[in-house]
Length: 493
Length: 96
Image 1: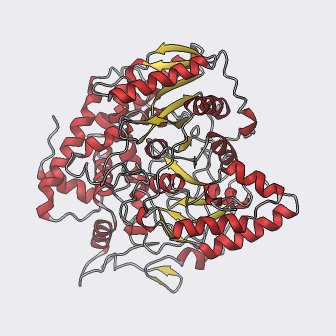
Image 2: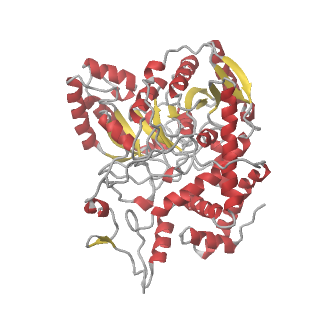
């Protein structure tokens, strides 16, 4: 069988269980696709030997009849996840050469379910970025292309999105602090879900902003997102914020029946200067859900406009604490010291050499907003506004809203380098529709819904009630089917 | 509009333990000022009586028994150190 790398998880699982394909064959097809896709720069640490070893073990397990859904499925792992014995450097120079002695809980759960890790995926440094241009490994290139320009796959999970869109793997892990799963999914015509805060253990994932970070799957279909999310979720005693709740069979909840569901359309998401195409797609999405029997309701989330500034206080504040550990003592890079340099010079030189410009900027902003005299004006105020943002959602859900439909991004993928001259705040605007969800701890999913006039994919976002990923996936599945998005990037790489 | 001057930029860089060359301080000050101006939109929100969020999900954090759960992994802990000697992390002299 050819093109095994193009299968979805669900298709591959059924073929594996029927004995019609082996995990080794699937894995070899993906490894070959990866070898031919160097131009995309999606995979940055390759683990072919480990992959084939795990694929063989998965085939044995499949033969014995004891195989969970992810058994034998080749996946890519974002470089933010610590993987035992395999380079894990969060796309930062400061973690050069770091090979963890342990495995993150999420990647361990996938491994234990029999999934086959093909290698580590490129990303923005420490997950700080919306275009995958801050990586120490260089830019990831979007497999979608409409002219001579190389486009961004989005960020920070840009390598994951590009790899899934280009069929280098069947699925990949991502993480999402302000939109880092959903925005790249929208830019590449793939599906990405950020579950409720606490669904996935954060243990072993390099921390960016601990109160916002969540892992999630990036896949080709909503069904695949349901299958893979289930394998990634669950309580972990090593992460005290992980929820001790049973993980439902998400796939079984994809019934296609959303009759009577109330879908909210938040008026504050109609941003000034929003491209007409995005507005049209949003209206079409609402129409599709209405046709499927849902009730469309206008809602208000009054504090929406404060979400970005709130996020850009809280996330850097937490990052400045989390990144304090990179000091050249226990792991990673240490700067060469001059005669007479003391420990302070070691810290300062190491961090200057090890962190890229955007990470330095955020760490310093974080240090500033937490510093004496400014703590109340910035950090505490932002935490109060965060409470108000969450209350907006609670009020909407209290009126019986089941899910909220919004655009995923304010534009389609833009050209790499196009934002180089813009001020940092311009880049932050990419997250305008997604950050609210992280601030409120809610589940959100991006579903490919159409192409713009240039032929680039656009996504719609659905936001669900806390812990109700199953219902959210069900609605997303209906939207996916109605939108009928089947386009794939033409291979040029 | 919030203005970060060069002196404040130097102080913030030191707080963050990042060496910033003197020549780069004006640009850094400008970048930080822009970002802070953007954050100042928050000052127009009425937050009177609002509790600052400490936990996004209203749940009690789990407690575990206060006991030793691992240990005897010194080699593993030191395996990634840029400079480890005789079972310790080695750093430049801290105390004269």
